[in-house]
Length: 329
Image 1 (cartoon, rainbow, N blue to C red):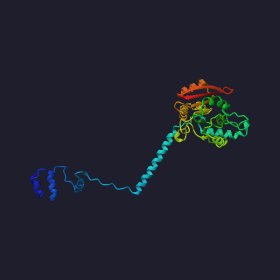
Image 2: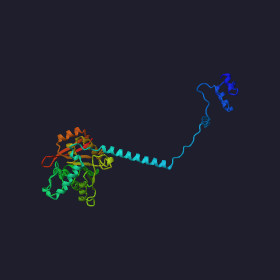
Image 3: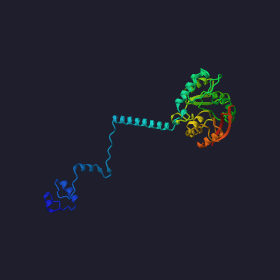
Image 4: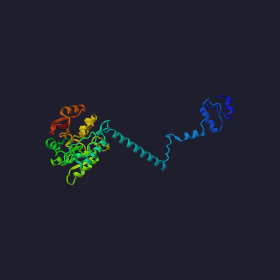
């Protein structure tokens, strides 16, 4: 610093060679100090106060103020709203995994079955001369019964197939797409005293619950359930999984899927595997269908099914029904 600058300051700081030390000395003496290098300024009082908060051990920590009741309430509302939105997202995601109705797939639609059973029950009292079936719906009855027995082979199925290849001592039996078939009663009388029968149509399940009250038929139960829907929305096999000695599908899901939405057959077979006993002793999948052995083999190959056909046999006198016993690999 030039000698004139020190003189103008009113104090003699020329003995101090370091400009920083000179600036601090001038600040302590209350004297202005001019002629500092370009861009250098003495710290303000506020800056010094901030530095004073620092000790030799580091910055002094200060406790943060506690949130108010209003702030806590707002946070709770935000948390509940976020949780609700997340739950709705997961529900919709699970629902998207269910079988999506395809254009032209009538039996993929709940409305189709509701209409069918409305017609079926309203027409029963009128007999064969009652209201004609809706388009695409067929039903054959006799004056001796009011059951809907597809192919008319339920008794033959129980005697020749189910009783031979399913063991009731291993676990209960699951009947998918039960409708108002006579099969539950025939199975019960054949020794399958623990059986679960499911259908997506509430009206037919209600009818069967009244027809077979548990007080008179202990061990036989009926429930509304979509066998192809995800478990997250109450679908799929009745829990717990892997407990059924047999899954029976008589002119039900297998037939209408391979007719109208064959791309969803892998989902059906996956649900069957989840229902059946696993391990050394496996359950069996029993199907009654209009498919011939060649047609069934082609369908299984396309679906990449992990099932082995244990046996096949024609049923009925018309030759339009085949029974198959499939075992998971």
